[in-house]
Amino acid sequence: MLYESMSFLYYLNPEKYKLRKWREDNHRNSEQIVDVGEELINEHASKLGDDIWIIYEQVMIAALDCSRDDLAWTCLQELKKQFPGSQRVKRLAGMRLEALEKYEDASKQYDSILQDDPTNTAARKRKISILKAQGKSAEAIRELNEYLEQFVGDQEAWHELSELYINEHDYGKAAFCLEELMMTNPHNHLYCEQYAEVKYTQGGLENLELSRKYFAQALKLNNGNMRALFGLYMSASHIAASPKVNATVKKANVKYAAWATNQINRAYQLAGRGTKENKCSVKAVEEMLESMQITMS
Amino acid sequence: MGEVELSCLAYVKMYLHACLFPRCSVNGLLLSSSPAGGAVCVTDCVPLLHTHLPLAPITQLALTQVDVWCAQTQQRIVGYYQANACVSDSSPTPCALKIADKIAEQCNNAVLLMIDGGKMSPDYRVPPIVMYERKDTRWTLKDKHTIMLRQWEETRDIASQLLDSGDHSLLVDFDSHLDDITRDWTNQKLNAKIAELASPANASSIALPPGGGTVSIVTFTWSSSTARGRQQNINSLSINHILLENSPEWRNNG
Image 1 (cartoon, chains in turn cyan, green):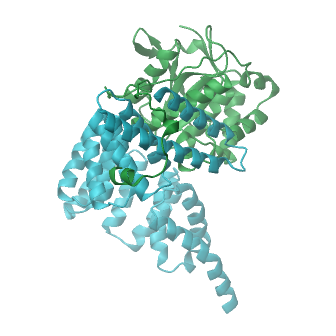
Image 2 (cartoon, rainbow over the protein chains, first blue to last red; image 1 turned 180 degrees about the horizontal axis):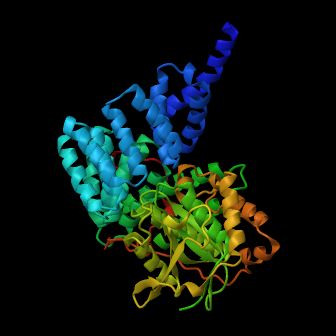
Image 3 (cartoon, chains in turn cyan, orange; image 1 turned 60 degrees about the vertical axis):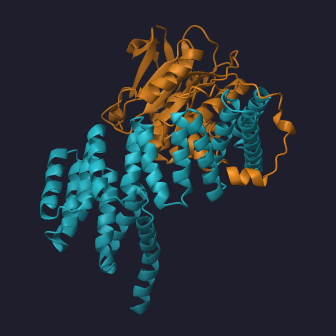
């Protein structure tokens, strides 16, 4: 008897651990979650103890992402039975309606949550997601701005807003959102690099110099960030090429670009070792850097 | 305008790209290995991005690298494709129009191809694509009868097969390449798999005879008025002569 239950535990742990890891890292690998989770629920529900409820929630959301309404419905029913009247479960029901594109009904569901609890951030964010799904970007942006006035520390919301602005080509406002994120997450190289990309896209000498600085900052935080390395190379090259800069600035930027070229070449040489696969892409980079060097001299 | 032929290889890779990132907008370039003039034969494609399509640096970088690779392999960039994240709207976005415009500057009968996400169900009967061509300065819908996809059913089956077997995860776009530069954005491995699956009749439309490519560096700027691509004079300073160490001066200023 003991041996049997122990072997069950041994089997269960890796799967439970995987699900927990994906939950904590907020991975959107929905197909995998459905695969692992469905089997866990169907075969071993009784052995999961209280963990089963959070697994039902995780699997339900993943199932919605994969158009598995059958599985989502099952999970939802179990959660409704266990937690009648719960706002959290109500929100899940709303998400299911969203997945079925019943946006009006979903919206009503979220409104009823907000009536009982006006500070429920999850419901507010779902309403904004509905606007996004319907392609109503301007409204989504407006609502998200209002939301952020109240909940100024919500990182996820700031990032979502920056993405919405980028899609609307409103680079100035996207930059502002990324500035907020960089202030609260000074060690995150991705925010630095995204900010640099936005500045580069805005164009103009000042923005190019800013973009170069932030690409460099991203590299300092993570010297494996290839986008930042290429970005540094391109921004420095463009500044050096500008007729508006003086000789000192030109010289400095030529230096930065040259340093970046060296690093890029080194990275690609390392990458090219041993694998035949990426010879084509390595060659393309080499030639590109060479041709850019020639026109700069 | 003229006829456009879409090869099995190009279609399958585009389709798989859209399937690999179902929650993102994706884009890529359409290539041709046949000479300019006459019908446009799209023989291959390079998947580019699945994040931040409207941002300039990586797009510029990718365009430059693909351009160089095309010159090396006697191909030309003849078009652009995009699949929007929002399934209900498959119309070209401003960024799609911008990039397509730039391509059209170098290639007369360039095409803009939008993948219609809403029509990509498992048993779709017609290719889920909408093609645009440039008339005067605007992109207009192309007459469906001028678009050719040889062996359509076989092509569709090859795409489904690769999707079912999970081989679509072999596809590398430029974004993925930047995440891990050992991955090959020219997708030689996947190309070989697709060629294997295609029948001998189709193989001829995959490997069209190489034409005379033109070396054209596609330069473009977004809203920048000072960044003029790669032509400029730096008072006879040749980069190769500069000391390439990490000077402390650089560290403080960077």
